[in-house]
Length: 365
Image (cartoon, rainbow, N blue to C red; front, side):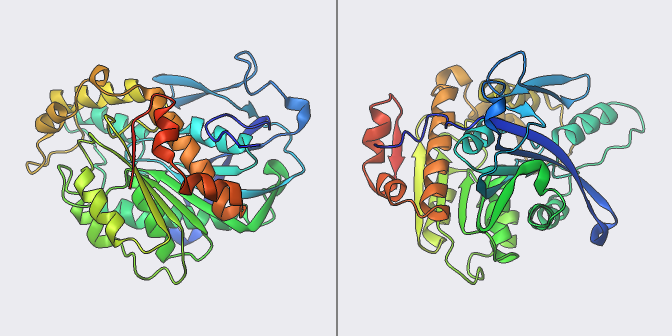
């Protein structure tokens, strides 16, 4: 029977929060969210509104829920691990729908807050920047680019050790994947130069190439030729991305070493692939157009970025971005972490027609 990669899997999903301390980086503390297949006793608790987890993105500012049961007993099954990296000024739970989708299909998914480059940091800077003499932290692009891949390595080191396994279940150390969005997509690629453990990579709208946010600086920091092994990579792009230009990602795809794939969701914007895409899109457009930003860089024309980011009502539905990202990431991980021949055949098949039948316009490169 053909697996429906866009449909949630049969496993109930648990979630827990850990804190990782890195003594090699002055005791840097990373809050870490981990989703995992839960024991059958928790069936339905991840989907029922009254029992699923609620969390504060920023205390007193934004409260959300996720389709997982907090601190549920893990399944006894041995699971592959996927480490997720969030975008700039975002947070570790920003793609909880992707994480719970993978967990429902038997994966453990871990996502750390990239401290110094989160939504909480952004809100702090906006608030403090509006006060006379305010102490703003101002994201340091180079520092964050140095920290982020190391956050992923620290996550792998912590979870593949023995200490946390009773809370999240059993992990297969030979089946490791990485995924991320925007700056997290860049991180997904960069970590391959630092750590040999990832066996599959799924970067979504990764920061790369010339663009309004000077992402060419990040391109210069990223190497694609020193991974030391073959890492199957699936690059997902958005046609109308105002931040990471599609032409730049086509160039990136050309530079990636095989095996590689690329798809483009037509009529989609930069944030189409995370939770609450419409809300996040309009929040960013408002911030850019109003100039309420914790940075002062005359080389970045945020008003032009806001204008180039069309109102969400003119773009494809948020559900299209979620379905494409979840289905393609799951199939990619199944194919390369589980050696699933059916998943590989599905990816090599007529993906454009498959999604077109569901009303989704996808270009397959």
